[in-house]
Length: 636
Image (cartoon, rainbow, N blue to C red):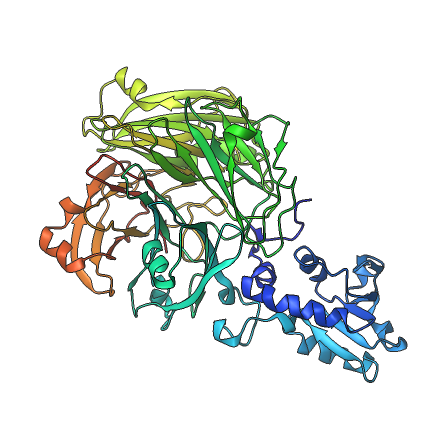
C-alpha cells in the first residue's frame, strides 16, 4: 500500500516530521528505541499531535505490547490510534499505566501539561529518544524546525568508468549563515552504508564539489551505484539542498546533467519517455526510507491508460533498483510517455536512456500532482496577463542541434492539454506558431521544431527558444501546471540530452495566485539569481538564458554574469542584454578569457544576476567528441 504520511503540501510546504523519522541516522536510534519499548511490558500511547500513525509507516511496532491509547483533541476520541479506540487523556490518571509513550518530539512540554495525570512510578518515553545528535542540528531549541532537516538525496555512481559529480555553492551565506557543513552518507545498491563522513563548506560564497572518483579513492571503494544522502548543517534562508549533478563516463559516450532530487517523495511521477527503436529506458528507483519497499508497490502504466504493471521485487531500505521500462512495458514506444506509481517511497527519480550506438543520457521525471483541478479563470487572463503561463525552453543553435518538445500531463486532473507552441528567435521575434489543439491525456505527439522551422523563415539568429502557452481556441481545460519534455540531438554525432520543466507567469506586476513566483517572499518574482556550475577542463559550459514576458516588460535585460572561484572570490564580471521575449546562447570559453578562466580554475561557478526581470536558464556541458548535456538551472 502507498505510504499515507504527508511529505509535502503546496499549502504548508515540507513536513519536517516526515524527515525527522525517515532520516538515516534517526532510523539507527529508532531500532534501539523499539527494542527498549518491546522489553518494557505493557505500553500506553499518548498521541497529542497525531504523529503516531506516520511513525508506524516506517517502523514495525508489532513487538511492542501496546494496551491502550489516549489523545488530546476531543474530535479524535474514539478514533483508531495504535490499534485501540483512543480515550481522552484526562482518563490517564485512572489507569495503572507503567510505561507511557508520548508520540512527539520536544515532548517535555507536552509531558508537563499532563504531569498531574501520569501515575506514580510510570516510565515516560517519547520520540525524543530518536533525536539526531545535537551537532547535526541548526536550531537546537526547536527540533522540528525545517532547517534541522535540510537534506536531499543524489544518484551517485562510480562504476566501470561511469562517474558522477555534485556541484553546488554555499548560497546559505547570502542569508546570514556563517558555518555550513555537510554530513554525508553513501549507500550501496543494497542500501548498505559504503561511507559516512563530514565536510565543511568554505566561507562566504565558496563552491562545494562532491566527486565520485575522489570519494572512491578516499574510502578505498570498489565499483558502486547507489545514492548519496546530504544533510546540511547551519543553514539559513533555504532548507533544501540544491545542486547540479553531472554524470559521465571515461569512454566519452555519456555526458548528462540533472539537478537536485526535490526532497519530498510523491505518490506519482510523470514525464518518463518511452523508448525509441533500439533504445533501453531505465528508471533508477532509489528508496528514500529506512524500511524496504515491498514487492508490488511500484508500478508503471502508459499515460492515460489504467493498466498498471507492478514491480514484483522488494527494494531494500535506502536501496537502489534499476527498473527497465522495456521489460515492464514492451509495447511502449516514443513518443508515448509513462506514468510512475511511486507510493511516496522515493524522491524524484532519474531515468537513463541507452541508444543503439551505446551512448547514454540521464534526466529526471517530475512530480505529478493529485491536488489540482481545472481552473476556469485561466482562460480569461488574457487581457490582464497577456500570454499568461509560459513554459520556455531553448532552441539550441540549429546548425548543430535538432530540438523537439513532448507536452506531458503532470496532474491527475489533466484529461486534455489545450496548448500552442511559439517559436521565437533570440531577438525576441516570433517566427512560427504551432497549434497542438486540445491534446488528449494519452496523446503521443512530439513537436519536431526543425520541421516547423523548415516551413517558415529560419531563425535569423541561429538560435532562440520555444514557448508553450495555453490556447483555448479548441476548448479544453487548464490548471497552470503545464509541463513538457524537451529533447536535443547533436546533428553530427547523434549524442542527445533532454530536460523537462513546468510553466510560470513571467515578468508582470499583476499577480495571479502565486505567480509570478519569487525565490524570496511573495510574488511577483521580478529578479534573477541563477547558479551556473562550470565544467572541469577540458569541457566547455553551455548557458542558454531566456527572457520570457507574459506582458511587455523592460525592452532589454540588465544581466550580470559574475565568475566566482571555488573559494568564493569574485574573479571577473560581464554584462549582457537580452531583448524582452528573446534569449541568448552563451559559452563559458567565449564569455570569459583564458586568463580569467585560469584564475577561476576547477570548481568555479557563475552567478547570473538581474534585478530588473526574471530570466529562465538552461545549462550544460560540451565535449570535443560532440557529447553534451542540458538541464534547467536553479536559483536561490
